Length: 245
Image 1 (tube, rainbow, N blue to C red):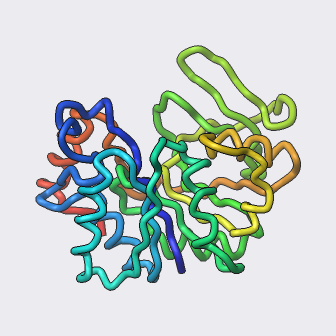
Image 2: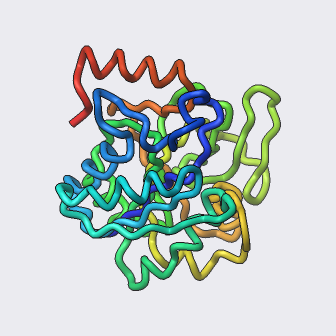
């Protein structure tokens, strides 16, 4: 399988740690977050990876050139301007030529999500995208109907909702893990250009009847490294329990 690791973010909420280094190279238990993600992808059977870079891009590129121990073929997608999640993925579309599904994994996520099971679930689902999700507090929640189809988005602080097609009476409100499996067919459906959010593209596609589905990962450890406090919390967890398998 192939994969993309989204590593272009500035990491503004992690300042001053990210003033002189990229977020993806911040360390947990002495290992860069990017290496932890790449190693988990390799263990799940991934052999080819593209990593997008922007903030302190030269540091990430230099680090990746030294990652021969992971036995991955790694390409770099450099963004001179940040393209957001959707734009960054679309820029790397040529890397995923063919019909084989692929992972997309945020670089700032540490988890024990079973990537092999996620890949198998995608193969059985017929979905254009299968999203690892769970019940958790979040500033943005995805809404899924009773058949696990994406149907909307919600800001729980303001109560603002955006529907893919129209209001749905019974929904599950779930946080996205930043881990997913996609079919390369999705590139045929991207009409957006430049910088754009993958979530917004998904809502448009779901409104057109495309299968964007939830995969529940509540049983697995998960944390995003979105702030200095969150990084410290993950460090404490790993010190007590080790990195997730």
